[in-house]
Length: 307
Image (cartoon, rainbow, N blue to C red; front, side):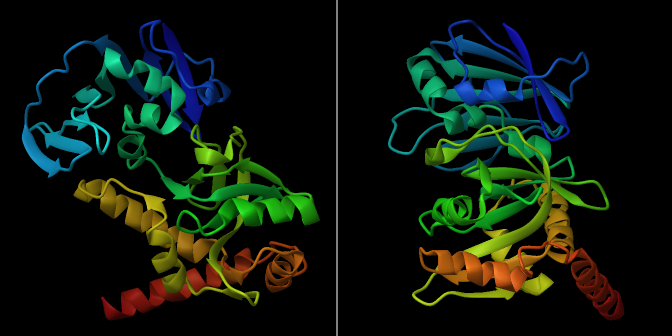
């Protein structure tokens, strides 16, 4: 079988056997196009191929190998499992082979994150003006409001409060693909939604990002670009062993922190948490990009002064 998908401006084609059933949410990202950025050929096997090249990452759930040509291979597993379930191998700059153990095909269909791990999309997107943010992605007043924090902090809960009291809607309960066109940032859907069960393929300009922490008293404040960079760093998916890709992602993160308003909301679970953030943003309005741009310009001037 053959299907083509797109998230943001990145498109990829999958060629795969009928015995491999794709996760349901992948269907929301189907497109009709002859030209794609990348092609994956997926094969179900009883025995995974052997890896070649230099071993650069050796974890229980992942081994990464690099060849002299700059291509990458991965043995992909799960913590607690005795053997890996897949082998990923790049054969060209725009093509990869993926071998999936037949013993794991049911899990690939059941868990979106398992399927996406086969494609190493964070490596592909490190070549694009994109960042993957761990967040609850909501749409409010035609713009994206992104609630970000470590798992268990309450991203989905706060998104739900805005749905309940301000009629926003959640686009994705776990991640958003952020894309920069050189002028502005947009949030795009992502085919993994975690336990939230909410996954839509929608695109909106980014209005603001809200970093969350739990507290008994609700407080909200605007973060300076350096503070925003530090807060966002741990919530961005990066290929941290690829130096060139990592530098690219960090540069983009600096642009994001300087361009987009980032707030911190220390909150409980109540309508007062919504009102507190709304008041800090400015009566529900996201018209604060000029201020963010000024902060970013000041940050660049300081860097040039000390260079």
